[in-house]
Image (cartoon, rainbow, N blue to C red; front, side, top):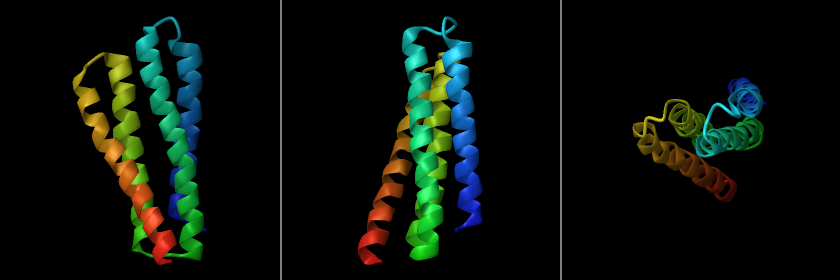
Length: 122
């Protein structure tokens, strides 16, 4: 198993669980329902992609290749940009952060596309 993506995935999942608990217990009543929903979307996508990074760590031992490794980095970038911008938007209300979110979404999509490529090209 690739250790780099194992620790990145584990760290992303750890932070996702912590932020999920913070959102559920620390932010409820302090944020509007809309802002809380935005925050929870960031947590949800962070957790999905933390597990995707674990898949990358496993796939690297089986398939290797640039596309699998690039997928892991794109998932990592996506978590930082997509989830990070949603956290910032929810906590600050600054709408500019929402404009950055789709860049993270594109990183997620590109990562999934590269995993498809790796599976087909094998």
